[in-house]
Structure formats: C-alpha cells, structure tokens
Length: 489
Image 1 (cartoon, rainbow, N blue to C red):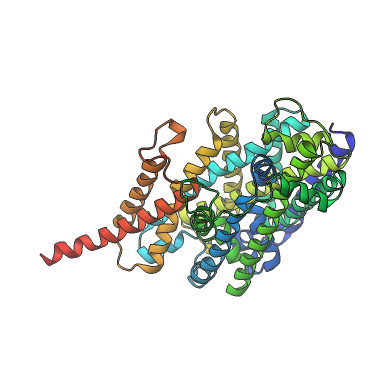
Image 2 (image 1 turned 180 degrees about the vertical axis):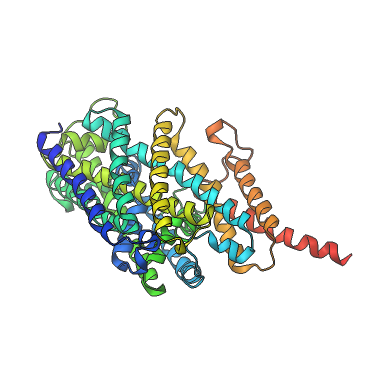
C-alpha cells in the first residue's frame, strides 16, 4: 500500500530534481554552456550520467524479471560492453574531440562533403531515439500507474513534465547533475531491496546458495549458437557491435564526451560508465534471484495466482517493503524514466539546432533560445509517442529491437566508412545505408506492420545491428569500385 509517507518521499524527490535544474541554469549564458556545459564538466559526473542515461527504468524492472524467469546469462553482455569501450576509446572519442564538431553527425559533412548525408544520419538518429524514448517512458509509467493507482496517461505526463522542466532550464548541466542524483537513488534503491530480501531469507550467503541450487546464478554459456541471445558469441561479440553503435554514434554519448575538457577525461568517463553499468547489471540480476528465493524457495510470502514474472517485482514493491521505502523505490523508477527522457530531449535539441538548422555557437543568445524551444518540442513529442505506445497491442520489445537495428547499425556503418574509407560519394553512402536497412527487413521483417521475415529464426536479436552495419559497409565498398571499373573500359 502506498502511504502518505511514501507520497512525501516521492514528492520530495521530484522537487529536488526541479531544484537542481534551476540551480545549475544560472551559468547558461550561451549555446555552448547550454549544450556542452562549457566543455568543462567533471569526468566523474559525466561517467555517471552516461550510465544513468543507458540504464532505463526497464533495467530496474526488467532485469529482475529476466532472472526470476530464467538466469543471469545476459551478464555476458558486459563482455561486449568491455570490447566497445576499447573501440570507442581508441577510434571514436579522439576523432570527435579533434574534429571541432558540435554534433556527432556534423562529422559526415566534414568527411563526405555532403549536408544530405549529415541530415540523413540526423533523421535516423531522431527517429530511433524518439521511438525509444516513447517506449522507455511508457513502460515504467505502466508500472507506476499500477503502484500509485493513477491513470496511465497521468503517470506519463507528470514524470515527463518534471524532466522537460529541469532540462529546459538547465540544459546539459541539469541533465548531468540530475543524472548523478538519479543514479544514486536508482542504485541505492536496488541495494536496499537486495539487503531487505537477503535478511528475510536468512542472510546473503543463504540466499546465494539457494539461488545457485535453483540455477538462477548461471551466467556463462560458451555456445556458438547465433539463434540464441544467451550465448557467448551473441552476448559477447554481436552485442559489442550494438554497444559500439550506441556509445560511439549516439548524440547523447557524443555530447557528453564533448562536455569533458579533453580526450583523456572523455575516455575516463566512458570507462567509468562501463564499470558502473556492470555493477548495475550484477545488482539487479541478484535482485531477481533474491525475489525467486523469497517467493518460490523460502516462501516468505505468497504471490497471487496467475501473476506473471514481469509483475513480481512491482508486487513486492507495494506489498513487501516497509513504509517510506516503497516511496523511495518508486522514486527510483521515476529517476530512471526521467533520466532517459532528459538526456534524449537535450541531445535531440542539439541535433535540431546544429544538424537541421545548421547554426552553431556563433548564434549566441538566439541559439540558446531556439535550443530551449526545441527541448520542449521534443519533450512533447516524446510524451506523444509514449501515449501512442500505450495504444499498441503488439510486442513493444520486438518493435524496439527492430528499430534499434534498423537505425543504429547503418549509423555505425556510416561512421566507420567516414573514418577509414576515402573517396566515397554521398549517393554511394546513402544507397549503402538503404541496403543495410533492407537487409534487416529480410532477417527480421517489420514487426510493427506484421510483415514476416524471409530469413527469420536464424539470428537472435543482438545480431541485428551487426547485420545492417556489415551490409552498409560492404555495399558502399562495392559501389566505390564500380565507377573505377567503368572508367577503365
């Protein structure tokens, strides 16, 4: 039951978030301050912000549910994350920091000499991030509506309104510093839940032993089965490509790299985010194992009949936590949702200002005013897509996976071509990108429209960005050779 004290804790958290946004907004005198914090943000704060943006509320709720119903084999994703940190640190960050760009996709105009390629990449990014933001805002709001006994639309609008407000005022500084607070609440909430459950079942040692006997702690599968996402080749290798695409091509990440004072600081923030990400994964997977022990083995409490694995953690939050702690955990869910939205709308605002309008820092106060307008516009669109997601009957997860591979894979391919292949023309890049997207349709179909896959069932979902990226690069290389052959005849 959500008590008056729980409401007070939740309200206090929301008010503190607003206060931080107002406090840091005092230093925003121009567009560079608003978008990059003047290029002098502390790398520790940036690193925490990077992981706070990455681990959404679906991590808080979905990771425990995954282990409750299966095991910890998705921990192998951290191998892919480690590989991505190395690639991004040596290949992407130095190039971003030394190229003098204000947006990740400005690099395409520099390398290919084409505004069309730059804007195409920006369109892909905006479409992907807007769809992702809508889902990441909708999913936790669905749980919040059940816990708080409020209308789903109200849960979406309230959490979004707070994030839009402090982001509008404070820009990237507000995003980063609220992310720091939100991560502390998010991570601390998970630790508190784990400690409470462990004490209820006889201590952490007893809980770990029982979870291990039940097979919940299994985390390694060296199989090379590409149709299974829970294998080393899929979670270790294929997932690394997805992580590189996100950490190296996502404007949310690039913007934070540019907010650090130099390459070394940006790399430190990137490494810190990976370490914290690993800690978050371990923590919330253990929460799932602990919940299984709590309800299924020790049987400290009973679950209602027919309760699905995705509903076990929300049920525990409402019925298994002390008064006041429930409010803190709900605040943690809000924290993750607002972190996802604030980072997204700030980076979308930057993309709109620099990539679509083509204005830079020289625009001064005019650019700052427009960036704030874009922040509100993208925030409202994010709410719209969250409300739209609430009306869909199909699998949101399948749709999210499809669009992630559809846009992020070709974007990564474009960056690698820009870095390592000279002499490409803009039409060759665009044609290659379209082919990369088409390859994914063959493998996965179009779930949102019920279009079946021609080659479905062969690859698991971590492979989707790898397939679209590889196709994009290969087609571009082939098209680059065609004119040479024709000219020689």
